[in-house]
Image (cartoon, rainbow, N blue to C red; front, side):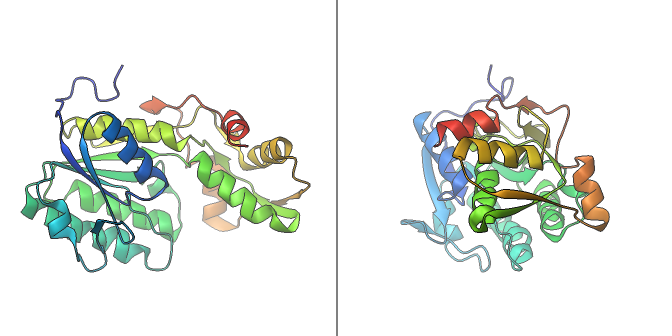
Length: 259
């Protein structure tokens, strides 16, 4: 059954994907293209539709004729607020001028409960989208398997891997992309759709799985994240017991298929 069942379908819609060359954006682009839609990738490095969310440069031309915009942009640097919050305002204004009918904002499960700068920015970005001038849907996802693998690989370079105490619920990015494509095909409806992985687990168990599957000889060192953030992560604020869509591919299975 489609995740957007009951919603109006738009055949052959023109869709712009902000961050369309990124991990999630490129998969959403491939999924919508496969479904027969006219899809364009927008980013600072896109070969055809180059845009800059910090200035709004390139947005007018890139959005011309588009029905739907999927905002899969991401930034975790100190400039995150300008790109994700300020950029959303610039993007939505350009969408309104271009006559875009549906804005899909990609966000994070539990972001409003995690007391950390990046999650606060994502929460504010959601609010800008929900209260913006273009009808909106928000797709909230848990951490991607790809993100977990990247963090473990980077952290394990020195054969000692610090692992924070945290409850997580990772999901394959391709499964999120399918849901985002469904929502993009539908009409703006429910404000937030939550997509989560099949299992809630401890970060240390993911690290053990990674070490076992990859054969890496790395010492896992437990690390206590202090203060409110540590309590929030241990409590599992970035997980959800009742997602709207639950993924089926575990981290172990996904990792085994990516070796």
